[in-house]
Amino acid sequence: MNAQTRYFFLTGAAGAMECALDLPDPEQFPSPRGIALVAHPHPLYGGTMDNKVTQTLARAFVALGYATARMNFRGVGKSEGVHDTGRGETDDMALLLEHMRSQYPGLPVALAGFSFGTFVQSQLQQRLTERGVPAERLVLVGSAAGKWAMPNVPPNTILIHGELDDTIPLANVLDWARPQDLPVIVIPGADHFFHRKLQHIKNFVVEMWRR
Image (cartoon, rainbow, N blue to C red):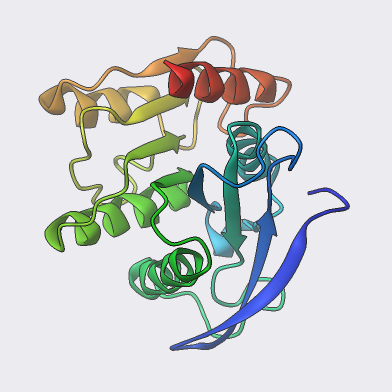
């Protein structure tokens, strides 16, 4: 993402997992104020941790002072293994969270994802909640409602969706959000990949987080 990005590997159930860490400006944040994990879109359709929406989310959290980690899911980039329909990917994200908590103990945790990554992060949040250690907040962009069985998410979740998304129609997201009484931020004219609309994602996340 930038010249300061640090790359490292973790060993998961499927083998080596390629990860990246971005830290906030030490002059502005002498120590990180939180941990953020960002999950990328579907591995079988070109999704990687370098996806532009994924990187935009990472930049937003770095700007907020969070130590921000991403990983390539199984079979992507230098990560070993094969796609596991979200189950193994959630296990791997949980491993990354465990690693980050060991490096930055006691800090609050944020989970963010794009498309397929929203399914992974909402599943992880469900696990964490059952264990009594939920993330403080989720950011879900292009939520995978209707594509995968998205669990319910906390009421403070930030949902961002494109008006013209033809991969995951806005109507599907509204049908999922409505019973939970969750607001959805709709970016007019945006498609699934938010072409020429990325700045809105970062702006919304930063502004809403600071509130």
